Length: 118
Image 1 (cartoon, helix red, strand yellow):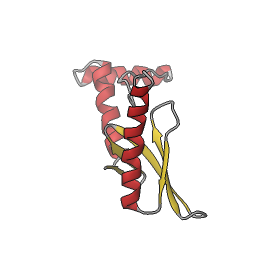
Image 2: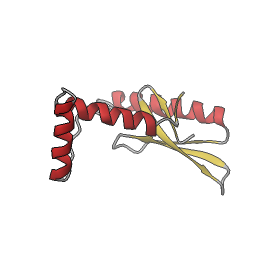
Image 3: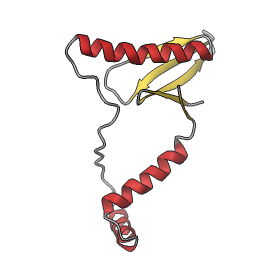
Image 4: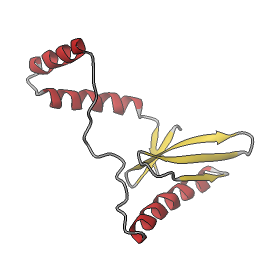
């Protein structure tokens, strides 16, 4: 298992061999939210508690909890890649945005197959 998901928040999980514990960190938010546990059942509970505490703490201080991702992606690519992608989108009868979303979704599904919903 490389990561877990709860209420739309994902976390990375590592095993600390020195302390014999699982250590997790919430991904996709600027705030640092960590948790740890000695077993998988405890890890699940600690993750849920970390997410729930993060949301509650943000609410208590009048701050909106960060959403893991907004849905807006902007990145730069080489002009040749841009041209090929635009051509592929046209050939598929789609806008570049539709085509890119489809390809990113396919790659994300494949590469994030190790995420487990808890």
